Length: 490
Image (cartoon, rainbow, N blue to C red; front, side, top):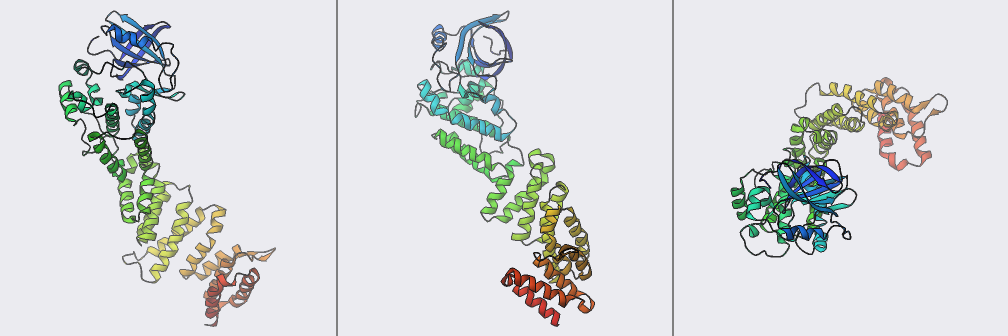
């Protein structure tokens, strides 16, 4: 077999000719996938020892073993340029090799696929009777049958010649084996191979030649877990979890004595934390609100060019507004974040609602002199924003924020505007004043008190107080009633 096979071949099988496409190297031969059929192929040199080929024939028609791909045929094929042996496995139409999964552009998909394979590693050890010396091409993720290993003879292990033929094989051979030393345990080579697969989820592999690959593999320095994770998007490298993954990977490449199930669980947990929303939530839960806001601001700088971030911009901006307002006491920054959220998704109500509440607090702070550095015309601008926010809400949401809007107008001293706003909300021509709207009725009294001569204020105060007494909620509104009564007397 030539040192380099074409990426596509035609194979003459018992069922007819099949077109196959290269997936990647196995530890024994090269792995191809049928272009149109449910088969994977292991293509072997024409001079492969006969005993190795015969050892595979016992798999044909054997009782199926869970998580091992059934062997359909072991045979040879030829074309005008080459002769080769092959093993054909049935893997299903919905299958994808782990090698293909690890080449995927989405880091979460790569990591999840690797976790799926790790969860099956112990079953492969049990069903094959020992170590499997895997490469990603020899593992198939089937939607129907679950993860499948393409079985092969226990021997041969990769020779130096086979590694020079396919330098990628050296990636998955432990430094101990490359140096010809005794392994610390029968399955330590498999654990190391999976640690390298984890590394390929994070790092681009340098295209070393075969000699340098062997030297670096023997020294265990094929990957540098301290360098930036180049296969992780720049925005994702801002998330704290990426540092955790790199630290873990560094320890695994030095000592791959991990439990496969435990590592798979960790990886799935990492995937959850690769979400920017989860990262922000964790920082907030830890009380690191400033770090959470700094992370959001950094993410927002690159959000326009990153689809994954664009899809989360609205929620990130709402988080930023809440952090700035409630925890860092920076209401003007919060207002800006909310305004950006509204511009991002003008069809969603939450930013309008939160901004409307915040505007009321900003107005109160400005009255107390608590907004140093605020623009002189800030409150005039907020009037338009407040009405915009309120009118953008659905009828149901507007009803929930009627009191918020009326309080804003009252705090601004806009008593006539507040009176005109509140009256249609509390008075029905057929039923009279609506008793359930206690807060709005009390707001209405306050608006009337603010008008010249306090016209009608005392009469409506009696109406509102009677509503509260009948409903039995005196305790809730007692302070407000006392305050209004004092205003009437004044």
